[in-house]
Image (cartoon, rainbow, N blue to C red; front, side):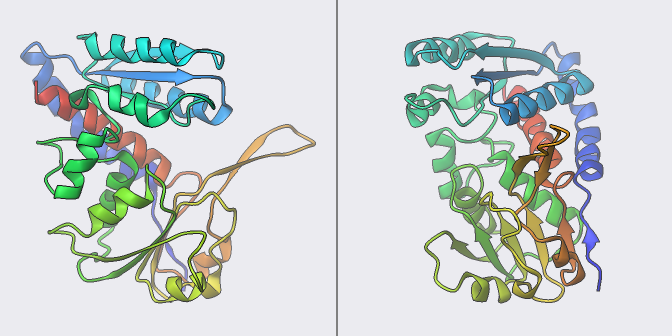
Length: 291
């Protein structure tokens, strides 16, 4: 068996193409979607992510508003930048690129955002709506990576309802919200949220119909962990620099040999990453539609 490659680039392109008509309709009534980003510091990964998001916005004709602060920025300076983004009418949705430098309270910064402009779905009010099962494009944004994972599963025809899902990682941006999303009515999965303290992790994974690895441990999920035919989605990203060439390579949490066992496999790179950005664009457009 060789897994079907879940092409995030092609799937994201399909999602973005469907946004074109919605953006045109907004502009026809004088509403111009605008993506804002707040980046603090010069982390290479964060710089790359933010640049990619703005490339996507320009490609779609979404206004692009970028705010970059040095790593030495104080919490007061970050607060001021967030308030400015809240007040900027050109910004219909924005993100705070995480992680923030040490010493800055990420939760406090997220709480300061205007929930209506929260394009990542990470404001406590929007996460609360996810808990209540009432979030979505027409109400409030879903977190981008979980929404992108579900979109990819659905577009590849992977059954979700009633299936066993193991999510490895309990982080705010992927694991916790993904578990909530997959168990809501209409998706109806049975989800186990695994983490570093999980006993017999391999045994948990072997029982799963869908596996999501999101911990940033290269090659963690081995081929003999995976049920034959399972769908495996790799969210983990580790940036490894070649000491000779100086070039960075992205490595996922899933061992390449899993491709010989799984039914579906999302690669790194080219899998979940493009889908996360596509869902961000969808959140920005949906925020403009709610105006």
